[in-house]
Each structure stands twice: as C-alpha cells, then as structure tokens.
Image (cartoon, rainbow, N blue to C red; front, side, top):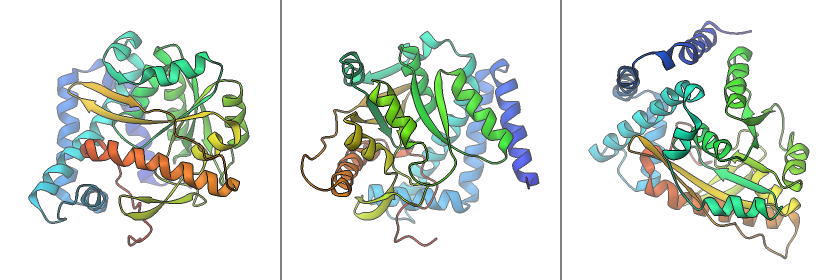
Length: 298
C-alpha cells in the first residue's frame, strides 16, 4: 500500500520534471541549496550517516567543525544532483558533452571499437545520470539497472527519465543476478553496461575492505568481467564548478588463477581500491547517506 509520504514524493518529482526546466535556473538552484542547508542544520539520520561515512574517508573527527563543513558541502552536492536531473531532459545534448571534462574516454571508445564489451562501474558520486547523458551524447548507448523505487509511479518516471537520455533500464526486482543474463548478453555483443558498484542492495554481494573496514558491494560488475571477458572500467564523477568532471580509469585486471568466487572477489577488491582514491579526492561529491560498513550499527 502506498503511503502518503510516498505519494507526496512522487508528486514532487513529477512537478520537478514538468516545471523546473521552465523556471529561472539561478532561482531554482538557490532553492535547492536552501533545502540542502535546512536538512544539514536539522542533522537528521541521513546527515549523521553522511558525516559518519565522511569521517571514515577523511579521518576527520565526527564532532569537528571541518567535518560539519564538509557534510554541508556534501548535502549541497546531493541536492544539486536532484536539481540537475529535473533539467537534464531539456538540456541540449551537445552542451552536456561540451561541459563534461573527461579523462580516459579512450578506455571506453577504443575498447568498444575493438568489438569488446565494457562494464562501467561507478560509486554514487556527482551526477551519474548526467554522465550517462554524456555517454549517449557521445554516440554510445548502454544498459543499466535501476532500484525499484516506491511508489511504482515514481519508479516509472525515473525509468522514463533515463530512457529519454538514451539508456536501456532494467529493474532491480529480486535477488543477486536477476538481470545477469541480459547484462552478459549485452557485453558479449560488444555493448556497454553501467552499474553502481559500492553499495549492495541485494544483500548477496561480495565482501571487500573499503577505507579500512569491511563492506559488501554488488557482485555484478566483477562477475560480468570474470565470466564474459568484458573490460571492467572504474569511473569517478564529481562536480567541477558549474560543469562536471569524469575520469574513466584503466581496466581492472582479472586474475588468471583461482576459483570463480576467488577471482570475482579479487576483482571487486581491486575495483573499490580505485574508488577509494577517487572518493578521497572528491569527498564532498560522494552521496552516501546510508549505512555502508558491516560493523556500523543498523
């Protein structure tokens, strides 16, 4: 049964996609910053989670002024993401491509040109939907998997939004590997798959060491690389002034020896090691407002 809160959130998103592109951008951006600052001042559970996660990444004390300043920047970054997704469908695709400052794009384009599939794995940083628009605007469609949001109307709107940017969107509707066959088919045919990769939503992920403690990450990106031979490329995203930064790292190597489970675990660990560096360089743009490490209280 859909709750009143769910219906209000869905209505808000519908209004955002319908109205925001036609309102003054400076005014709406300021409104989203104000919402971010208000949530930061209230310091509810999500903000406290963000601060705990950032403290682990940076080594800052959880009661320090420096961490509070960083979490404020983090909340502004998070709300900027939402502001931008409402504007993206109406943005000129050439402008999106022009304003995306990319390092390592050849790691995608050269691999695909050689007929080999690519798995792009990314943490929840910057604006991942904008990066998807950059990729499709550069002439490369791709497949991704979306969390099934509540209510269903919100999920459908999110899917329609991403499809309007040129993505193929599969629903995350069940246990681990639900869409694995489809994703494997895409990369075996030389296509591109993009997957969030540092927070496991299935509860069936693989354990890794991440910033000095154990967490569980989705098994899909690493397993696709091991089983299909696709190139697994870590991507780091951040906001760069009014524009966007994106770095596509070199391929994560797949060990030649070991069991499937051992090789997959090794690839997953190598992947998050790349994430650690990128997140440490741009901590304010890492949107992790949820419990992540297994030792943390629920």
